[in-house]
Length: 153
Image 1: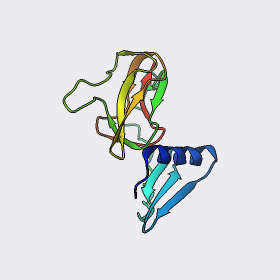
Image 2 (image 1 turned 30 degrees about the horizontal axis):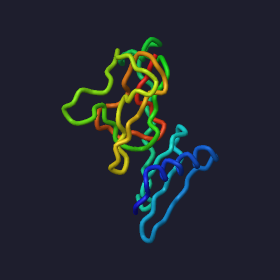
Image 3 (image 1 turned 180 degrees about the horizontal axis):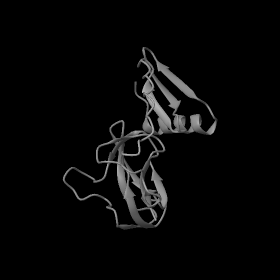
Image 4 (image 1 turned 90 degrees about the vertical axis):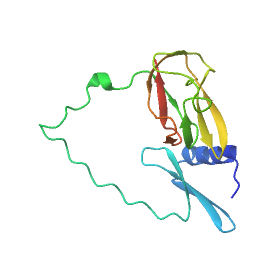
């Protein structure tokens, strides 16, 4: 199956904008399904993949467990989100300095990371100016459409 990244992004936007729950594309014996996720994001998966079982519910922490996150741990600032499904890379190449680190000041249009999708390296630019206060994903980690990559204050 040979769908271009822009085409898949447009389909994901179509699902989100039109309140669809999913869309499936077939090409011969191959297919791809784009589904709206639980939190409103879009998830792509091959149509032939078996459904994943729902995770077991998590019980509330007991009084002797670790303290809950404090209000000060809540991310502040404007999120920079992934415009596509892919792999997050903080630097232009392995061993290079990352585009940005926590504490760096960024400007509108500045490249802050790369999301690799279908073997294409897509530079992600900041849409806001400010200081990077949190990077939410690890280098090489898979990211979903709409997932927060970092916060800028």
